[in-house]
Length: 384
Ligand SMILES: Cc1ncc(COP(=O)(O)O)c(C=O)c1O
Image (cartoon, rainbow, N blue to C red; front, side, top):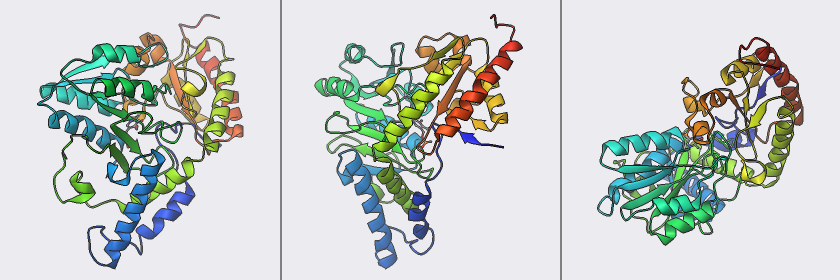
């Protein structure tokens, strides 16, 4: 059976060039970067080379990049470390209602430990309004964390405007850019960002590696104790093959031609799906939306059912973020956009990559209308 992978928001395939770059670090070059012999030096050199590549991609300095185990750890690191290091200044943190689960659950934990969290509303397309942020900041605010590209709706928040508000009010600004990295501009200088979460497995790199960018001068202490790795900020023997794979993935993904390619296929997909009756696109259009994301609600059918039928035809899709796909709760992100539970439960996310082909999109556009039609035939809620 034909297999079409349209769940690149959950994870992506490893680029063969990334595997090739990583292989020597599993075999001959297996040294520990802390060792002082030649094996160690080789590992250290690869680690620092990788760090520089990632730093350059966001216009940061290499010593502002801390390797972690991925997006979840970087987000926890940013929120919890900033909170506890700066608690003398205040105990108030602002996030949006559409953050990834790992930010939301870190916030719940912080609430139990004496911190107050404001969850900002978003508009109908999923954007945080800089004016709302301005109004929410109080004397005790120490940190604002706003997602860059949303994993469900593809909404790309305006970091520059949000960063300016934070800078003006002397509040740290963190962004979770796991979905947007290399798909739209990320520039720590232009966008006034203090901390950024990034990971490799959304951009054809390996799973289990990410970074936290920490601007020089930010008051933050480590929350993981052990050796003196990563400038004393994140203890643990470094994942050299992961770092090398991450950097190789970045080098390839930074070529802007990939953005244009994915956006063209995404728009072809959106146009085709919107020809099905009673379908709505969730999130914005054009370059305010991630180039690889499409999210729809189909009247009178469950997204789960559509996903199951598509799977039987070889097409991988998703009904929410991968981490919450196993719960039956309607997506809190779509609900925050103003969808009712029925609309949220009828949603389907299709996410592309630079490896997605036009033929795969056309196959999806052939199969999906048939699936929706047959499900509507048996739906008690469907009226022609
Ligand atoms: C926006 C966002 N943040 C964080 C994460 C978590 O990253 P990781 O899987 O590397 O822990 C993901 C991945 O699902 C994500 O989409």
